[in-house]
Length: 442
Image 1 (tube, rainbow, N blue to C red):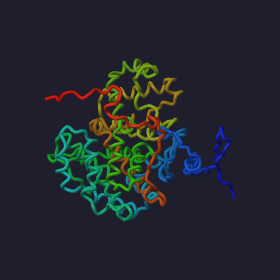
Image 2 (cartoon, rainbow, N blue to C red):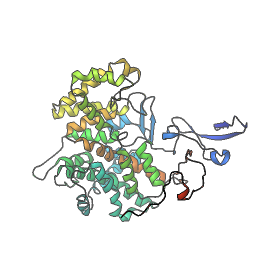
Image 3 (cartoon, rainbow, N blue to C red):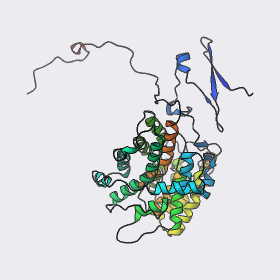
Image 4 (cartoon, rainbow, N blue to C red):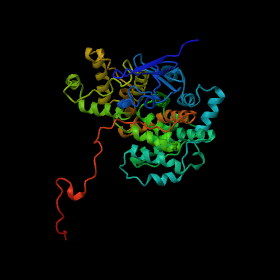
């Protein structure tokens, strides 16, 4: 029988030692189980940003940033993008395995027939200013779903959890499309049950009542891949936010709204929009060498957006998939946009530069997704909304896994306090610098 690994912590001042078990995963590094650390030692751990802290055990997504590996339920992201649809990936994230033919049919039907939203939500939208940012709207309307669907809020009922999961996966694209239409001042477009998930989303975004619209197969396939590639990414900021909110037993709609709010941050979901803003700043191919020099200058605030990744120290596996889709979409649309040409030239030059090669600053998924979405006709304000459409299935899968964990507890991080030590309250008139009361001001 193999002996379980342990970790010994030694106090170098007193000589005391404590042994802690090591929790092993099926892949990746193990984790020192320090749940009893404070009770046994009187000390906490300090890990700002939680870069060395495993907040949970999860069987959903595995990442090896050094090797450029991303797997969902053990399936490689490249294989999923090549051979599966987004709803197949969604099924695997929720239930653990890719569906068989009958499971796929039933799941797709369940999602398709949940895509409409309550008609009163149309009125709810009109409470926002016309120039409201789509992410501000999404934060509000996603959380408001709990006011419309009272029959699936019991988080301890497995069937209600499943219904809420299906509703969120189905309705978030509808709300996202409505946010776009509201921003453009166009009529809302109802979902269609004869279209697949990606086609239906594109239809709701770009159709108008005055004419027939049918997305091309190339655009629908590219959109489906974008959704697959953004479906889940382990315990990132927004996913951790959803789990933390869910640990308080908040309803799933509120938890997803919290994830959307976290995703809104430019350091998280707004990176692809930052890529286009950077390209606007560069302006022309002739300016690329100047801006690459600025990127290499540690004293210059300019950063090359869309290159490198917090987790991946190798090529982002999602970027390799999306690059092929990017080329296909641009060819399909016949887009002639100087900014897209600029992006391609920037990628070519950067990938031939030793500075970026040595530092493994390869294009990431955000570099290509912004280019594709712009070519499709999405305004940059919608980029993070589209990220939320894809990531909802990851959030709800992570939430479901946490709720079904037998020993789950409310999240309660600790702190190292650095403020003032105890001090008495001095009466107001005796406080240093206090002025005596003067005559009343009339």
